[in-house]
Image 1 (cartoon, helix red, strand yellow):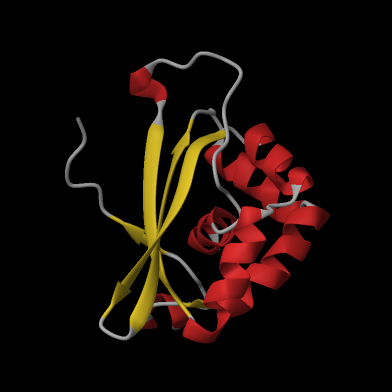
Image 2 (cartoon, rainbow, N blue to C red):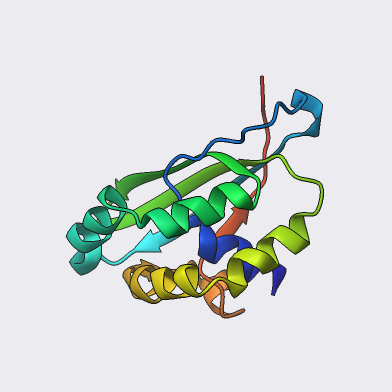
Length: 137
């Protein structure tokens, strides 16, 4: 469930900032990957070009900053890579707060059908697959 919540809300984020200063050693970084259905490419880009203010506000309230989603075509398939930094102290609580938000739930109803999870994540009814960080400077 935790991985599903992390993965789902990532699709809603573009960039967010945190108003409080956080020491670098207290920042947790997350990277994830999922597929994108080719026929949904234009719609997905349009959604994120005009992300809903209520959703962006909730992201900030949940201690997410520096959130980005990147698109890459590999062969005939499209993939999304997401990155964000978590600066809070209760990750599970913040992810629950985001998942319980009605505006975020409506956003996910728009974005989820666009995405094409990797097989191992789809088998767990997830969308985004968490990635291992192998280097950070």
